[in-house]
Amino acid sequence: MKVSYSEDKKKKVTIVKIDGEVDVYTSISLKKELNKLLEDNKNRLLINLEKVSYMDSSGLGVLVAMLKKSRKEKGNLKITNLTESIRKIFELTRLNKFFEIFNTEAEGLKSFD
Image (cartoon, rainbow, N blue to C red; front, side):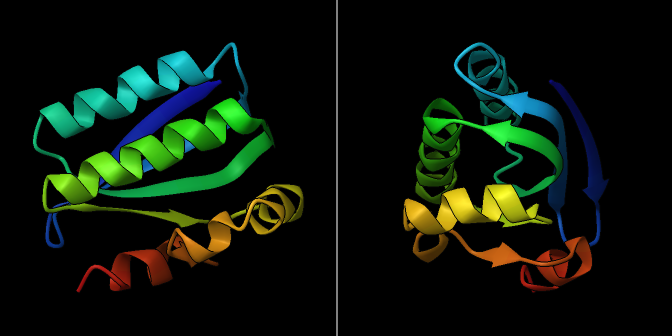
């Protein structure tokens, strides 16, 4: 799994792109990466899952924990670009009701207005 970042300075949103599998082995490093962003006062996160090929419950758990933490720090975490298989996981677990999910990065960024 690889994680890369970019920033929309105008909206003060950090875009996090995840590439690969998010499972019990990689979710620990993802949690560390996202925690570091929150510690650096980057609490407005847009998570792009376009290149995530697989996600298990540990990956979902990390996203839920980071959403709660970002909101506690007056921020938010939103998700964009779900593949069909990852979208099904969010629907089966009903996390699609918990997260704000957008089809494109542009839509996700606009929602931070």
